[in-house]
Image (cartoon, rainbow, N blue to C red; front, top):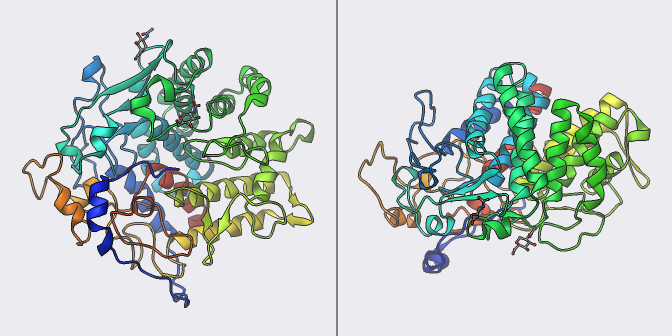
Length: 505
Ligand SMILES: *[C@@H]1O[C@H](CO)[C@@H](O)[C@H](O)[C@H]1NC(C)=O
Ligand SMILES: *[C@@H]1O[C@H](CO)[C@@H](O)[C@H](O)[C@H]1NC(C)=O
């Protein structure tokens, strides 16, 4: 999943025949050395291109200007700010909160390795948390979506020109949304830890709100799928149920507070964790292998394992599950895999926006490897014994692939390396900036730029896009949404991964 931003089908039909496919060559490119520091800076810079709201004077991606300044006015709330999720102009709280949670986790684990980029990473978190605070400012109400997603997706329009309905969709006590609410609680709790050292007052504000929103998510249970169907589906339907978000929220609150209440909550509710895959089908092998905007299971187990690894009596089922998760990824493991690998070595899972899996799973592998080193532990997959190095090696393979060590010799991060995607599925990037072209462009005012075979007008530096197909081929085309669209939650865990490799080479 994650290919949630569909371009107008009639445009696809009109040009489908003219799209050229770049084929994989059997000869690998010359091994270029990877500049992880450069990639790290760019991966964080990307978030400025996704900003909604009032753009500050410190903005470095200068082709983006103010947008969505009336957001929330339809229900008398100030909902200005936050992030657009991908190549469209909607603010979806569910994936936005996951993005913020994983950015915060990146800073918690690897902030010390980021150097001067740590400050930029904290700014990227704050842009999200400032909005999430607004989205939860009324007790027992949580803003799920701003912007009518269907109307938005029918247009190819700059955020600065948006004239589609900016409808606000909220969940409340009678129409609840435990997944979106608990994910916001997780994001706020994780961010409160990330800000502890630099802004204690803000950190406390985030934590207090996280507790309040978590209580709301838990006391009024239900899925936002049915409470705000027009806002949730088919864009970010919750397929995996909301128990994973409740446990994930509790796990972050426990890490932030050390309060036994959250630990007991996790123990009590673990049995309710649904074991369904990302397509909603019952999952063989306990459904512990997913980590993305929908399902948090692998992240829950890895996160909690840090606490319990040194105390084997307390380790079940988290360490067992986290080990199984690792075994389901490592190519050398004899156990059943939850991923496949392309001939060039890239991790694949079903659905679009595949690089979200490569980045998020690499992040978990590195985090878990570091916990293992700390606890002097190995992972046993049948007869195969994995040392922490093995996990790091797999994550490095994914990272290097994304940055250019692949059969096409191209980077899948915009603006990184010699050869990178030039026609991404992103409205602001495609259409001339209002700086260059101040005249208003309406709903279809951007269509000619979408259809153009020319490279993007504005470079969305640092954006990781959906990436290549299973055979390592890549179609450099805006029409190919699963391959060419960036999303915030592909970049967010990658920030931590790049900080780690920047410091380790
Ligand atoms: C909750 O939201 C629904 C639909 O948005 C609305 O009909 C209902 O009155 C709200 N309930 C409360 C308690 O505000
Ligand atoms: C959300 O909607 C999707 C699509 O209709 C469905 O498959 C899924 O089971 C729903 N999830 C929940 C938690 O209701």
